[in-house]
Length: 434
Image 1: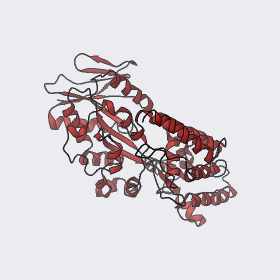
Image 2: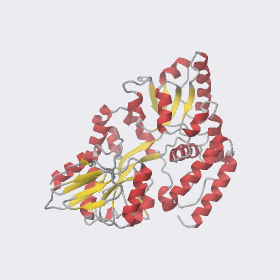
Image 3: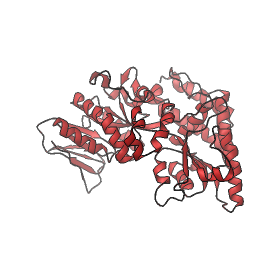
Image 4: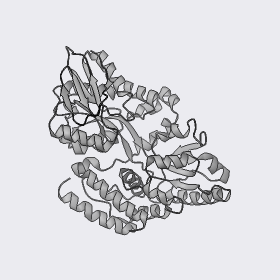
């Protein structure tokens, strides 16, 4: 009837099921006493949500009388996915509940139960519709949203005021404002100052950035909901060309190898006017030791001349393994952890962004983090990556997109060449079946 987690002193490379209710995984041993009731194993991960997940699981234990085994998994999303694929591919029943990235439902759906078979028909009421749609594969609800992210524009409100500029609404305005203030700040003595910092390395983060550029120009989302490839169009090409013009101009050459933390470092040290990043940056940029504390504003990302602001959605969800011996109990645990009450506590205690719309108007949530109120419109208009519709092929789709985009940023291709090549490559992938 209890939950206990301890660390194992020796690194382990295999998943082992031990006697006495112990599970050894990746250097951790998580044990629970022998229980009369059922035991549910949940892989919470060891990232942003790991600290609160065991708390919520313990509350479920106290409510139901069952026990929970919390399984630690790798920090790296790539390694976590590989572990899940190994477990699910072997039809292992070692884990009942899995915390899954927003782009995994379509890749793992064959191994996940339809939560609709175990939860009431109103189980998805109140969640952001885009997140429920993302987690619904071929009419099957394979996961419930746990917390979410979306791309945002951070800016130096003191510098905009100093130089007489407004927060940009279009990418063209951002470019012009960044050029002007960058020049003025450098003339004033800050030679290392840049206008715009973004994630330009050839990795999933560039897929997120580039999808925002393309979608906000009215250029579509690579692959539409029907599985049709839509990337080969003039608006998408123009979006990529505009981004390429930033390199060496308002963004450093090093942006071609920057991920989230490098870009945050530039902005937080006072050396960038604008930053594209995720909501987690807000508390860090305004925290103790930051060079820009109290000087930071947050806004929706800009849009193109024929589009509207679009932010790529991120976040994590909970799913139930098809191979669980207790799928009904596992589904109940998922519903409990993703409930409004638990998400509210998660938001207040850990600063994570809820997936239930009403919590963005909750006074206690807003008091704990006023920035969450500003996130609402961004999340409502968020654009999911085409992971559900492309299924197992998503990793190749994303890889093709960020590689072609990186070639444009590097000057090896122009936007038109890139979207033409990308369109042909995705068509070939699609013919094999999404």
